[in-house]
Length: 236
Image (tube, rainbow, N blue to C red):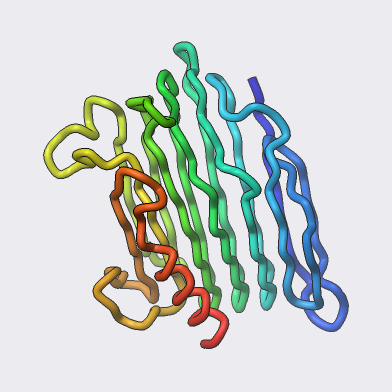
């Protein structure tokens, strides 16, 4: 059983190299690049993850005027919990003028896994978040275990995204759920509005969400959306 928090905090951006605080938990953050106002970090697994009874937390904090790019080195696999429940929490805080870009690798739920996963993001006025989150139900040849996801995001203190997604075996086969799909691929932009297009829907707050349901990860067409939104984020 593990219960450790991974922390990446970037602050004090300006004329000197940005100050970076890294703490290893279930994932080890590795500094890839750093300038006066931008940091790139890779997240590397330190142990077999995720097992029944584990509680993993990833905390990403971006100070005012700083830019943080986070990359996962590999997918995360939730293994057979042997009757135990695993917890995974993402906690994101972007201060005024800060930017966080995280293109997460897939989170895969194996047969026998029982996972409760939450994402909480608070983006201050003038801050920006670009997040890609891909969930896979089952490894190759598997039906997949149970996953329940809770997402809460705010912009300038106002709710922007609130979603509870029950992907347990008994729920995902219901009408209007996944049908034959195994992959849920989602991109969320918060803090600015991407150029309007038919491939996403706009939020009431400045932001948008694009989502695809597919049988295979490579079948999702969101790579083009990610590329376009990343360019807009840099340009605007």
